[in-house]
Image (cartoon, rainbow over all chains, first blue to last red):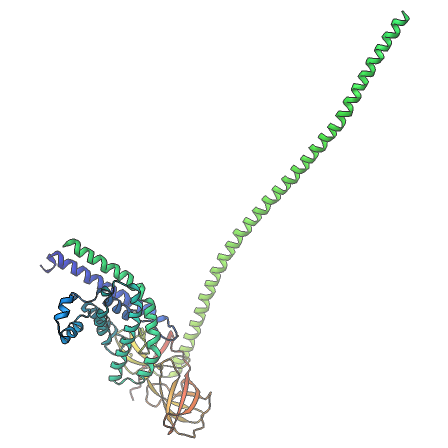
Length: 201
Length: 268
């Protein structure tokens, strides 16, 4: 019955594609990228995908109009801003975090948080300026590693912040370099699904 | 009558002279022309012969070149195949010698050992871990020591049925008791990611030199005793100056390991 409506089938199809993408990215990271070290640092394809996902799909909340902004109070605007993250980015982040927790002895909370945060910088709001995906991935990777470092430091892992200084910059740089490879196909998919959505309605 | 004869004779001699002149004229023209024709024909025939020779020799040369290039291609492909074969054989020879030494190590260990292969590496930059292809089904338990012929690799931290996660000696959470055999000095070796591992809290004045061998202590029943760990790379005072720190260069390159030996902890 649930699968009966066309909309549910379409949504289920999209979720299946997303699940396949997540698994493929995870396998690439495990089987391929973990063998290549650049200056003793690995690039983090799952984190890059989470950020690119959040940046591409953004928040489902509609943009406030000028009139709405004019009559809103500052706390209301802040709350609205806080809520305008990317839920799908957070879910993808949680998927990757669950997969990562099977091989690293910590649940990386950073992934869902970064997925949500990436929605704040949705490129839908930046007139689809594609080149912005590079600095955004750089900064959000950096932020993701800081959150991870804080989490690991809280659970008592030694030498966390000295290692953070060593890995965060090169990893963020590597992630930023591979970002366009993920961003352009994902934006194509986003445009296609939007077009299909408009065509069916 | 005589006059008539004379005039006939004159006429005859005139015509003979004319004929002779004509013949002479023909000869004078024909001889050089035929000579010229002959020389032209011989020139042409020599040119033709030369051209033919050039053509044939060029054709032969081209055929030789084509044959040579085909041969070179065949030889190049054979060489590439041989190089591949050589690389494969070298790899196999390395694997065989590694496995042979591992076998020697296994018989020398004098306790239960399980040989395993590294199948994956941790996919992030925070944890220094590898996954091996043996697990609880092969009697591997948490805490088992993992060594190679070159030195200490790490310790098993998680076990599934057919695979285990090994925390490498480079991980800062990995600690093991070590001995500087020259001095009989014991200490705790701590990993420091890709940097040199460290022994902290060494008493000031201890006579440790760069290059001294560091081996496992083996008192806890986890690591075998006297197995190589590394060599002393640097000795310095720690931050508060109350003791010394020793940097140790690990013998095993934890980023390039394939075959390892797992030693479950001794029960007593």
